[in-house]
Every structure is written in structure tokens, then in C-alpha cells.
Image 1: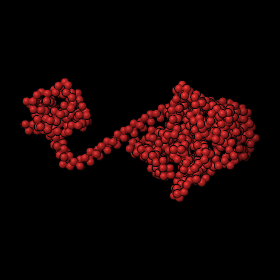
Image 2: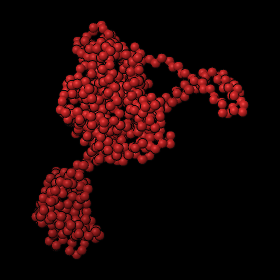
Image 3: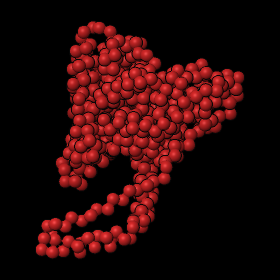
Length: 620
């Protein structure tokens, strides 16, 4: 009915006694409205929904369709065959069709009397209809504008629905995180209580004795209480347990890169299935392994989803922390890429040491809302994409060692991140701020911590490198990770644009490192040019971490940093400014350098339009 109704134009007719009548779709676009204005000043108006019209349609026969119904109505108005059959105190019956026609070619509508002046309504609609016929081009433009506004409204609805979905998911994530944090706090309190009981009970006596010995006229000036340093000795932390069967399946995806069942250091722990064994094993995979296998199908795609991978591994995507039960998205993604590139075999990296190192690196990421091991996995994947489909490795003539260094840098680029930014570290004079002289505090710490970790032979995956290759590898990693300090963004942009303008190949060592640094910078903030659902999920995590820092600043009596005050949320405004003035200009330069990445500009435009069209004031 609605489809036929919406095709029906506004229609006018004058009855034999001079009464004006009009039939049109009402403003809700769901009902037929009839208006009558008589010559003696009586007014009638009624709206008919589908149920009421169904009853009237029955006058044409029980099998009559809506097409016939509206044809009869149109013919009656177009032929000026509309008349008032009868009137009562509050109702008039309007016949649409000739009085002497057959009963199956006319319709009778009961219309209610009203105090509203329907003649004014009829006149206005008549003038509007005349304007349409007199100025069709102008009216067409109006309709087109309305249609554009309608499409914008539909887009806004879709965006808001998507944002609601993401917010609901993140609320679930927060509740689970709160539960886990509560349990963790309880365990930490138990540890504090246990360690307090281990303090030498004589410490108090020693302190009291020291106070007694310093008594005298200058005791208050000379007394400096002796501080007892309590060294906490923790049990040796073991690497996480990893799913050997899952790693066998992953290693079997790319059998030609890591060889077969040859017994060597690079193949000493995970034994891949042969080509004949794999199909049978795939047919009886567990549900978890099927989900991980399916997630890895997108390893070479831009929309690779680390949230889905983490959920497949651990049941949900909140256990991206150092105490999760097993390996997570970072572990699986890095292992899959190293196997795919064949780096264990090419560099003769001991597989046991590599898995221990990978476990330790993933375990070094904290349970921050944003800067966690899933973020590292996401940045790692984007770095791989830029190297491969993005064309970076081919354009810059990178060797395997440089590609491995790039993946290494991406995996560790936020290692041990405390969930605060450099500015907070500097203002509160943390140990790392002092250690690194307020210069790229976190970035220096990330790199230094991992290389310090590898001083342990059991975690040194670079032991097989020569001194020269080790030094080159380390320099590449340092250059890449330090470039992720956003306070140096303009410096890197200026340097890179100047180098691009020279129109020379990026094949010298310094140019290759610059290109790799820019690639990691892009990967680090690539959320703004990912598919909208991923962008929304990451931006929600960013806002959580920003607000957490703002809470810490407020508790210390500091002013909240911009966009970090949850009491005056402005994350949407911050995201819009970031995309407009920092990200899109950066992305345009990178798309010029890597033309195959041009498609990301369209995705960035979608994310930007979401903030402009669907801004609800609660930014993420």
C-alpha cells in the first residue's frame, strides 16, 4: 500500500455544489489525507491508514489490489468526478467516481468535520503544485537537495548505529576489565601484606636506637633517619605456554619458506605438517584453531582485525596484557609473519629462543586501554602491509635483514608503555624522563628495554648476526621507533618532503631508514584510515587512555591535558583536528611516496566525515 500511496500525486477537484476537495499523502508518508471545504464555510478532513483504506478498497471487490484502488481515485479527481453524497452533523461522505457508475469503479470516503480551515490548506497545496509546474527546474533542485539531505541523514543514522554498537562492545570490555583489575588488586594487596611480614622485625629497633644516639641540642638538625632498602626477590618469570598445535598449523601454511622437517636450530621446536598431512589435520581443527586460521586469512589485507584474532585466541579481546593465560594477537601475528618471510631459516634464528623472546615481548606490554599488545599487533600488521602490498620493500630495495628489522621495530615500538605520554612523564619527572633527559622519553625506553632484555642469551634472537649486521639492525630499529614521537612529527615531515622533492631513489642506507621510519609512523597512527568499525573501536580505546591520564593529572593537582578531561569530553573535536591538520596531510605525502596506498585517503575521508556528520559530543 505504501509504495502505491507514495506514487500518488496531490489531487484537486471541485464538486457540483462548488466545494473544494483535495487528496494527498500526509506528512508521515504513511496515510492518505482527504480535505473538503464547502461554500457555506464547513470544513472536513480525515486521514486514512492502511487498515481503514483496506475497508474502503473492499468496495471495489475483495480481490482488488492497491493499483486499482489508486487508479480509481486518480481518475475520479482528474475527471472532476468527486461529489458529496450526504452530510451529517459531524461527517460527510465523499464519492470518488460518477454517481451512476458501477459500484466497482467508485469509492466512498467518510470524512470528519473539523474546526480547522481546510480551505487554507487546499489553497497552499494548490499554489505549491502550481509552482512545481511553473518552475520545474527550481522544484527539481529543491527535491534533489531534499534527497541529498535524506542521504546524509541515513548516513548519520548508520554511523550512529555503528558507534552505538562499538560503545556497547566497549562497555562490555570495560566491565570485564574492571572485574579482572579488581582481582589483580586483591592479589597485589595480598603480596604487599606477605612482603610486609617478611621485613626484619628488628628494623624498628634499629631505627629507635639510631634516634636515641642522636639525642642532644643539635639532634633535630643532625638526625637523618637511616633508610632500609628492601630488595624484592620475585620468582623467575617463565615464558607463557604457547599452543604447539596452533603453531604447527601456522608453520604449515607456508611450508616452502621454513623448509620441511629438517632438524636444525630454526626448526627445532615446531614441526610443521607435510603437504599430505595438512588437509586431514585441517578437517579436524578445533573451533579455536578454525577461528585463528580464518583470522590469519586476512594477514595480507588492510582490514586485518586483531580484535577478532585476540577473541579467537582467548575468548574475548580484553586479555591483551602481560598476565594473559597464553599467547595473544601479537605473538601469533609476529610468528606468522616470520614464518611467512622465512626469516628463521634465512638467519638461522634458534626457534626456541625466538619463541621465548616473542613471549617476553608480548608479556612486556601492559593492560592499557590503547597502548597494549593488540596495538602492537595492529602496527606490526600495517608495517607488513606497507612493506609488501604497499610496495615499500621493492621501492627502497630493502634486504631481508631490513625487513626483519622493520617487523621487529613494529612489534616492540611501545614495549613497556606505562599508559601516559611523554609530557606527563616530563612534568612529573619520572625516572625515565630523568634517564633520557626529557628527549623522546618513552620511545627511548621502548627500544632500550628490549635490547636490554636480549642481553639474556635465552632471549637474544640476534646472536646469529655478525657485529656489523647487528649494529645496522639496531640502528634501523632505533631510527624507526624514535620517529614515533609525535612531538617530532613536523621535523620528520619536513625532512621527508625535502627528500621526496629531490626525485632520487630511496636506496641509500640513510634514505632507507628514513622511509622505514615514516612507514612505522604511519602504521602507528593508521587507525584514522582503517575501515570505520576498526577506527571506532581504536578511537574508543584512545579516549579511555586519555581520560585515565587526565584523572591522574587531576589527582596530582595538575591541569588536565587537552582532550583528556572526562568531565569536559572533547575527544571528537580532538580527533577531527588530528585527522584534518596532522593525519591527512601526512597520509597524502605517504600516498605520493607509495601510490598503491592512495585508497587509504578515501577511508580517512569516511572516518573524518563520521566525526563531522555523526558528532554526538562524546568523542572517541
